[in-house]
Structures are given as C-alpha cells and as structure tokens.
Image (tube, rainbow, N blue to C red; front, side, top):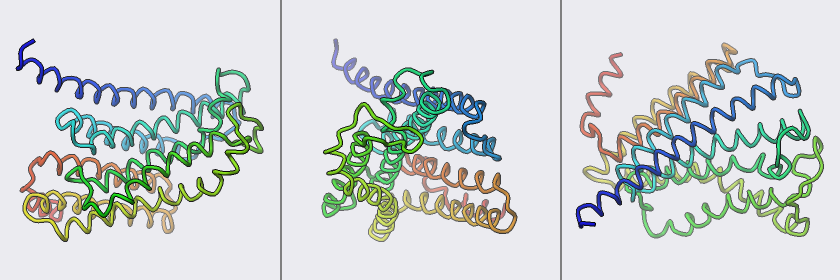
Length: 298
C-alpha cells in the first residue's frame, strides 16, 4: 500500500463509522416509535393528546443532532463535538427504545419480548447519557478542548456522573417498583452504597448543562478573531432558542396549546446543533451580520 493510499483509507473509516452511527440512530428511532405505538394500542399507557407533535419534535431533534454530528465527525474526526452530537442522538433514541421495550415486555404484555427483564434497570437511567453528552458539547465547543486546564476536574466529575447513575440504577433490586418487582442484575449491597452518589450524579449531569453554557460565556469574553466569530454563531442560535422558549411559555400559560409548546421547544433545541456545526466547520462564518439583519427584517 502506498503512503497516499493509507491516509485516504484512514479518513474513510471515521466517515463510515460516523454515518453508521447516524443510521443506527435513525433505526433506533423507527423501532422505538413502533414499540411506543404497540404500547399505546394495549391501553396500558394512554396515547398523549399531542402525540403527533411529540413524535415530530423527537424526529427534528434527532435528525439535527445525528446529521450534524455525522458531518462533523466525518470531516473533522479528531474533533470530539461531532462524536458527542452523535452520542446525543443515539443515546436519546436508545433511551426511548429501552423504555418502550421494557414497558411493553414486562408490564403491558408480560413475557412477549425476550430479555426485557434484563433491561429494567436501564429504563429511567439512560436519559442521563444524552444529557451528559449535550453538556460536553457545550463545554468543548468550538475548539474541541476545555476552556483552560483548570476545567479538568469538572470534566472528570461530569464524565463520571452518568456512569454512577446508570450503574446505581442497574443494580437496584426493584427499579420499576411498584409496577414490577425484580431485577436479575440486582446487587443489593452495591445498590445501597450507590444510592446517594447516584442522586448526586443526576444533579451533576443537570448542572453540567448550565456549566457548559457558562463556559461559552467565558470563552466569548476571552476569544478573539475566528473563535469569537464562531461563538457569535452559537449566540445567534441561543437568541433564537430563547425567543422560541418565550413562544412556548406563552403557548403553555396563555393559549394552553401543547402542540405549540412542543414544536417551539423542539425547534429551539434543533437549532443548537446546526449552529454548532456551522461554527466548527466555519461555514459562511463572516456572513453572520447579513443573516442577522435578514432575520430581523423577516
């Protein structure tokens, strides 16, 4: 093999892996919705009144995170944010898939799905994984590195937190009580030890989102040149997301329109991966002022 062929082959593998993970995310989304429909058809869990809006919101967020993550990971495989965005999309849909699988196989139609009881401990704990990935996306954007070495202790803590949460849930004797008792993976002694750390881990994961947003503010104050322009893209997306959040609040407390609330929140969340991808790839980086003026005019 020639020297020129080796780098070309090395570049193809990350791209293939990235798009394979994106495809796996879409597959998990389809299977999850199919199982959710089966669960609703049994009547054990009622169909949400805004089911169409919820499904559309999940699809929008998933496609945004998976597509941008695949493009970033395939073009800049050494940059961690692309892989983290893929983690957000995949973990979100695996979490929804696990919940539907366990509820249908253990509660709605007991014994109908193989291995459902082994997934009981993962039902409510896997959501912290995609939230943790989202926190690291904020923390590492746009350079792919921490704002400074002083942030290393927090990065280690934020990385350990979801592991402790998932492990604490998996070894619980009755993670689905009172609807279902039993867990073949239970280790009661370890569950008692991890009870308090697991609760602390959930808190840390939620706080990591705020810390990640705060790190962007710190970066913006210190940044110059290209990095500052990259962060302006994120600030623009955050401003649009804040506007959509205001729309959601008005729709929730004034108009009582659940569909508008769901759609507004989903669109606001979906904008952030798009802005992140544009900032890291530096796509039309210096056209932001023109885009903002056209947005205001529109």
